[in-house]
Length: 342
Image (cartoon, rainbow, N blue to C red):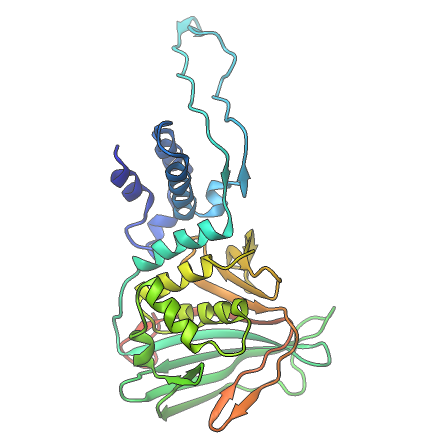
């Protein structure tokens, strides 16, 4: 089995295919057993990481650091052991497994490879469903869901806010409270723009963003203003992974995030609605992104820095943020008509 065959064996035919998530751990064990010891450790590590992403962390249960030598099953038994009088050949000694460190950078680079293989645009309307956790000065947390469809070419769309709204008080059960919004649906026709570094971006502008890391890195540098580099990079990663950008642009953004110094990887975590994944945390702990096991799909983002007030500059609104604010990205993708869901 050559390198290309190994990589094909490790990678799913479709990131969203349910059969991909049901791969058996034995399949990975078989693949890793075939890795020649003479291959460079960096390549062996890369393939190990790809396998971990392909199988899902819960299934493979590879720890963040694997150290030492794996002993073969039945170690210590003499050759030619017998069972019920029948001779049984001893298993050949297994190869030594080198120490593998699964860090945030390696995880993000694997995620970038997976993101690049996702399906390209198909459909007319960009659909998104997000659940937002907004801390209040009282200590309560307002939780609600927003669902939207939008066609950037015609400006036609629909937005429903206040879905499943509730208030969670510290130490209390969730429930209705004063100030909880009721669901509201609005059909509209307007051009929606997102301001990045003084430039208003339309839906088509997002689709035309650079599709390789160096080009996107230059674009980001030209649009960053007074924000700290880590905050801006995390914010742009969230924006790129939750907006109608190309698979190549998403992959490039993940590679740029991987270059951030001091990143931490937290494995075996769940997002606020219970979906399993892994968290990538900035060096100062202010920014936290939760992604799925493939490393390519954004599940949630959390902000743990100081409160930021909303700012207005002409018709542009710069969103504020409160410590503990969370956004869960329940679903997104392209659809052909309003009301359909991907």
